[in-house]
Length: 459
Ligand SMILES: [Zn+2]
Ligand SMILES: [Zn+2]
Image (tube, rainbow, N blue to C red; front, side):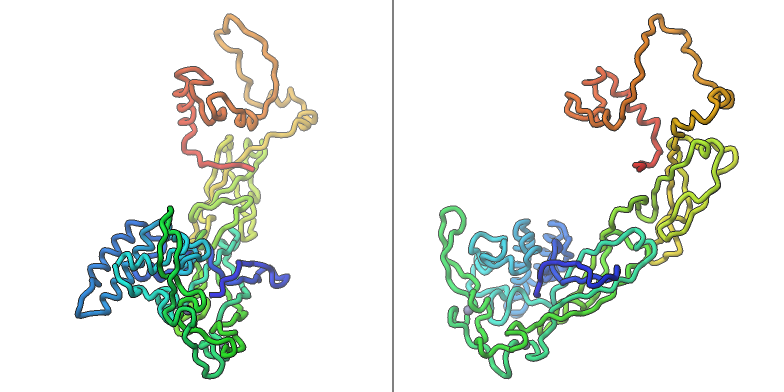
């Protein structure tokens, strides 16, 4: 549980190693309440409500079965927390610690204790949910906390697969005291402050100007009701029951894994006495690639060809693939490549996860680079004109009035950025404001003419 700030730093000069300190991030740090209701931590409000109703029917309090009553109360309490956006968020961020009064950014009002909420809920004085009862903190967990670690990968990693070795630091049960936290056979003594109850009465503002007296977890014993005296504590773990240990883990990034895919190292997480350790969960995050974009198993890239290649065809290595292979393509004889043309290289996309010999497709946008102007000086323009298709003929019939307007180059990027009084940019909003009523339809027609072209941003 020793969640410390996340760190991913090089442990050595080797590029595949990095050090991770187990920590909880934006993903829920605890999932016990979700487990109680039998829903995933990503469940919607509706799913939580349905799951609770179903569970409540199964475990409705029954005088003959006190355990059912206990389970019902636990579920009701879990539902109470997860059904409100505010408390659910606090729980996801801070776990049960976020549920106790004054906890780091706790989700309840100042000093508001979950025990109060349960008391309100059930109109009873004992803690239905095992809060602050001696020897417990939060709901009983069935396993240790999971550690969620985002891990950045390149598209190359996902294409080729990769083994990553990491040095991690995690909590393990203290070997000296076997997790008791005590020196020798020393036993914890009843907490003086709360007299063993685990809670104390406090008076706080309950929102608005209302003052309320209610229970708060005892800060002296952290709700345990008992406490080891300083001199009785285990020397090695200082009474914490666990100590930090450095371990080395290996994860394998399989070919074709998806962005945001999770790699779970079961049982590799922090240990706590008496329950199995949590998992370490790596969530892959793909770094943007400078030449390829990925969509599922397909890839998209842009290749520049010359004007002569566009007119006369090409037979060359068009690109270097994610595994370093050159990809050689020959265009068909007699084919002229036009601006906006693209080709599909079948089977050159991403490997499919688990069946990496099957691959998606690679779409290549062909961008035609016109020659530099200096090239014109090296050739005979008349000879070129004789070879090229004819220029456009004079407009027929010629308009009655023809004005000579100077040619001035402009940058289309600037035009796109130019704000117009209509409150948007030139091409974003081809509305009547700039071109007069009725023009909009024409613009839409223009766009329709281009349909079927994959979207691409050539570099
Ligand atoms: Zn110890
Ligand atoms: Zn106490």
